[in-house]
Image (cartoon, one colour):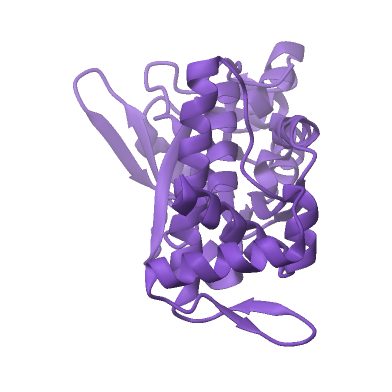
Amino acid sequence: MDLLENLRALVLVAEHESFSLAARELGLSPSVVIKRVNAAEWQLRTEVFRRTTRRVTATEAGQPVILKAQTLVHDFDELLAAMRNERIEPAGTGALRVTIALELAAFGLDEMLSAFLQRHAKLRMEVVWLDRAVNPEAEGFDLAIDLQLLSYPRVTEMALMSLPSALVAAPAFLDTAERPIHPRDLQKHPILALESTGRRWAFRGLHRIVTVEVTPRFVTADARSVLEAVIDAQGIALLPQYLAQPALDSGRLVRLLGDYPAVEACMMARVPDAKASQPWVQNLLAWLALRLADAPTRPA
């Protein structure tokens, strides 16, 4: 247990970059925390921290040690909590940077993140909504959530939720255009597209998947802009069903190609490999997976 408590002190010093703040959280004197960290470094045979009179920072060799220690301490506390039927949160304070695709703005992810933040008083969170694809490893995010069919090096992907899609048009548009009866007919019509859907659209035929190459006249990452354009009878769009459903219910849009339902989109979480084992990231992913498992295909 001595090693575990030494690692706990090490983790808190790393998070606070201060012996005194870590000591305050542990209810110990700074001298005791210093002794525990020194002992941990000796036991690990690694100089984890670079100390100056003003601050404490991790050494290059110490950074991976800190990540593994965070996971070890959290897993041990989680095991004890499970045996005691208690709920815990990661040791110490934490900070998360999250980016979400703008086209998911109507889905309610902001409310889910807010609820997670309320449950964890020691956590700080920055949420950035962007209208473009994001490589979280390159841009310094702990987590990216989007609908993009992309992969990045040193980034782990996790499917969060399947989202049905709907091919739609406005009645006024169909008054002046021939209604498509097969996916290839879309090549004859003006197309309004989300960046995440790409230029190759897939539909479920009777015995196989049917794909068609489209050439959009309007492309954007802003799903609301596509929705407004298709309601204004500017063309045909493939939209997440949760976004199109209110307009379908009111008759402002109609569904097309009923015999060829669109292949579902997938909400993806992308985490840099270096961040994947961090307890706060793991807790947030578990929280989102649980909430989305019970979520409808469109927000209320």
